[in-house]
Image 1 (cartoon, rainbow, N blue to C red):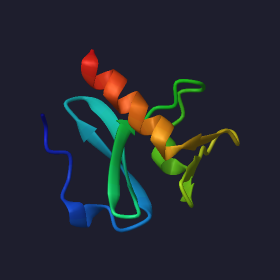
Image 2: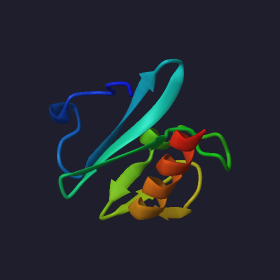
Image 3: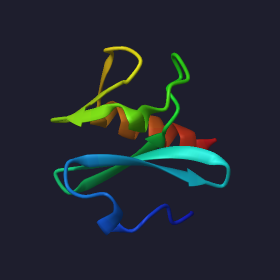
Image 4: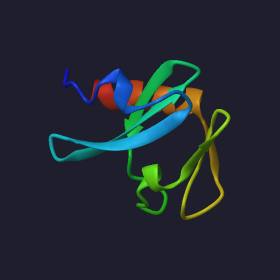
Length: 82
């Protein structure tokens, strides 16, 4: 496991992108729960951290598809299995 950032780097109800071993990841702090997923949208290859976090949803900068944080957490589990 790699350290991505400090807790203080991602304040409550915000998200931020980080580079980890030549990969971009998104860290979101929702209700003091941290979620980490791939920061590049698989749909249009947009950089997700440029979007915005509203309530428990990420709003992409390229389109208006909404993804629930729990779905993103499941994606992380899938990515970690690879």
